[in-house]
Amino acid sequence: MPAQVQVRPALRRGQVRRHLDIAGIDLRPGPGITGSAIASDPPVPGTRETAGRAPLNPSLSTPMNAPASLSNAAHPRIVHHVFFWLKRPDSKEDLDQLLTGIRGLAAIETVRGIHVGVPASTEKREVVDNSYSASEILYFDDLEGQAAYQVHPLHQAFVRTCSHLWAKVVVYDARSA
Image 1 (cartoon, rainbow, N blue to C red):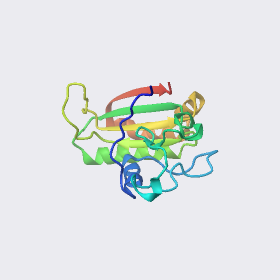
Image 2 (image 1 turned 180 degrees about the vertical axis):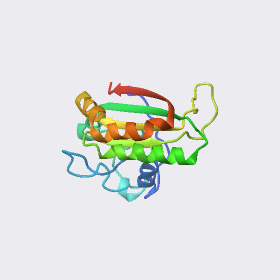
Image 3 (image 1 turned 90 degrees about the horizontal axis):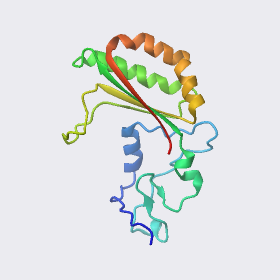
């Protein structure tokens, strides 16, 4: 018997795109992609538009019976997650300069997606570390793309112009499993 999947309440039209924008998810097509991954907001469940459609996969926001082209296999395979601790954590100017520098990394050709963030005001729990000042998540197709990013002139310029701002940097690189 297949496992039961719990689906979160559906978002109304317009909310999906807004949530992706807030999350910093780039909806522009990348190399080899002919269209946006999200052409329009999904229809609202329980309406004529959704009759007979497969439920959405809550982790991917794609139909659970979607073709492989919409599954995790089609997404970048390498994730580069970096946490920054500023020397002056109360300096808005330093944070703004760092965030601007991080956002500039999106122009590197091998970067397939980017998320730039600051600590969220989530529930205080022993396992949550929100002591950092800013974070970036960069997505790459493969290890070669991530390696090209490391030596790219834009990345090197970012390190030169922003490294004086941070006291500590921690990097987590992961591959799709």
